[in-house]
Length: 140
Image (cartoon, rainbow, N blue to C red; front, side, top):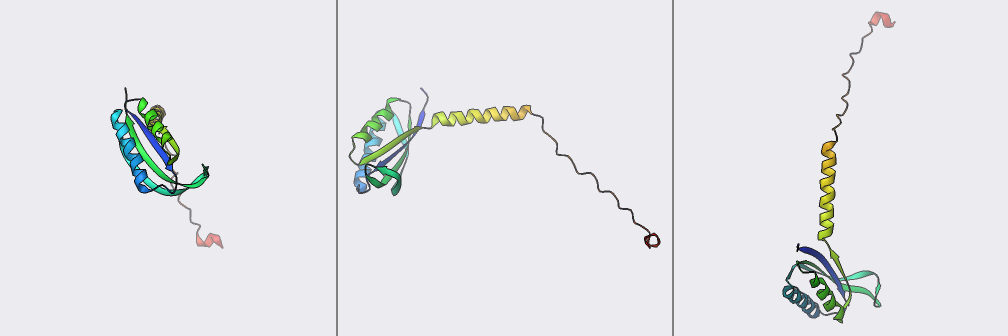
């Protein structure tokens, strides 16, 4: 099975202590290791304003993770663990490898089309015409 790449973003209640957020991250890292996955990157973005109310909260503590896995059930397990955590109010998982493959495919398609198309030469400007000088006697 191919390696899959996921973005995992979850939001904790704004009053959640840093230690509890660290505990959630450690739990997710342990679960991913058990299921043959690896958390490549973890970023704690801190408390930020939400675009809309979530569980009566206007702010939340954001955590961003990049997860790599060859097992399909890893994300289900991570989402289950986030769902049962009291501190987490919202989470979202996005599979990136499908989007990256689609972008690469479109890029190759564009390159093929561009290579088949004849290149148009920009028209060159005509050489400047020498101006005829009028004799001074004829001008009067």
